[in-house]
Image (cartoon, rainbow, N blue to C red; front, side):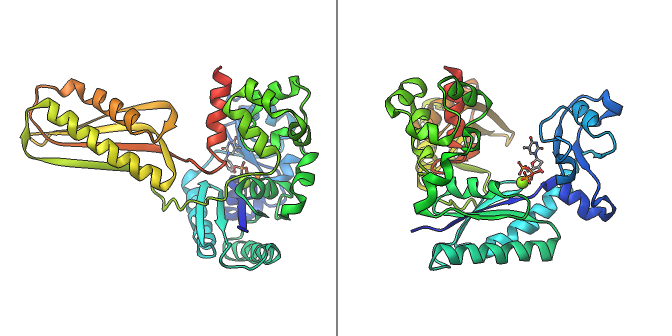
Length: 361
Ligand code: TTP
Ligand code: MG
């Protein structure tokens, strides 16, 4: 049985600000756009838990946050500070994982299956990790402990700040039953609305809904909902090693004038790339080509797809299209790359893609 932890830093940007300026502690702190005494545009990035008592939350218009809590300390985001603290936190977490996957600036999955014999030991490890992060960096995190990524993520969100929540295999359906459907990863406001129209308010309602009808209404996303409502999810914590793109290029023996040969090379590079993506369980949305001419001038072209792909034909066709404008030139080197990477097997990005598709219908 896999043991997976999901770690999520508490009110992350605001906690970083409190770390830099300890005099902020105890005051409501709101990070986001300039409120301009209530006239400001833009939104709240996040706020600390003191500000949350006033009803302020992420993505709220900053003008509303100002109305709810005019005495708060309002700060513009300083991403380099957050990135620095994030890097330090991730380094600590990474050390304690058999496999590690950072999924955003403030959250990561850890597979600790080989390090601990039981789920109980996994939760002890979570406690130790939480303590180490707090002690070394002075920020708190919440940790979910369970048997797959979906449940671990729900668990980390369950008790915040500084919480640890364990969901055992035998408790999973009971645990999920009363939670609102929005707690399921991949259920955003639009899907929530559609599900509510069907009378589905909780994850329990969703689990009791006929799967055929979910499929008819939502296609593949319906399948995802069916599995997710039962607490079934991926255990694939894929090492991302910080990689942001996959690329492959080739230099011709002599500058190539035969465009068909260039197209052939692009096809072959795409195939190698697609095979690598599949092996790593990764898909990407942005396909780019690089072309170097005989005089060493180098140009790139790229296009971003609506849905991430690892399909060799899709990559190859698009890459060839992107090269078309260079027909007739002497080409020295050609390269294909894929970025905007997403984890295929993880429940993190796939459902989001699915939801996007569902909402386009
Ligand atoms: P979250 O983990 O969603 O939020 P949080 O860490 O602030 O609070 P919580 O204790 O509930 O986990 O997001 C991490 C950071 O990402 C957050 O500190 C700021 C940023 N963020 C935005 O800029 N806009 C948003 O809408 C959200 C949700 C987050
Ligand atoms: Mg967080």
